[in-house]
Length: 216
Image (cartoon, rainbow, N blue to C red; front, side, top):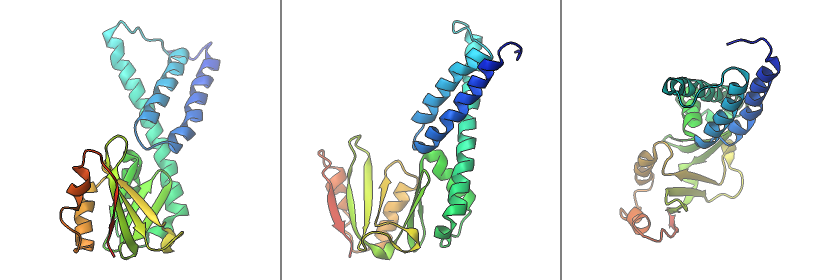
């Protein structure tokens, strides 16, 4: 690997990497965007450093290693910005959480979304946003399915607009979010009067129609 005679291509490689970091940060809720950005930047890597022989099985090992390193760099750069942004600009919203903020943020960044439950609050971390809602302020829970048939819960507050502690009037939690099953148990704990078959009423329905469950 030589740097002589291809300095312009090397600059294009690093330029494309740093140019694609912002959209990866903005749309980081699944692995699709980082994967596409990795493939794009890998093309510029081939132009600047090394052109693999795709008919050589041995080269495929290094293709996977290089793409893995590029993808890892996206996650490192993204998490640094994600952590600094949420930790220093929105730290006041986490005064009620007795846990390690670093682990909370890293779970939210790796999974694209992270649900955190405490005795008083339900919290959703998504990209660069933190939504916090007190259990006692929840008036309604909407249950249903998305177009891809994934289950979701929408917690709606009886208060309109902005809530204290920087929260919002509603929080959406999807089936693929962390601790979704634990969240169901927390609902029964917080609202013991809820019918035990409320999930079956909607999620076993082939049409997946949404309904509202009033908890107050």
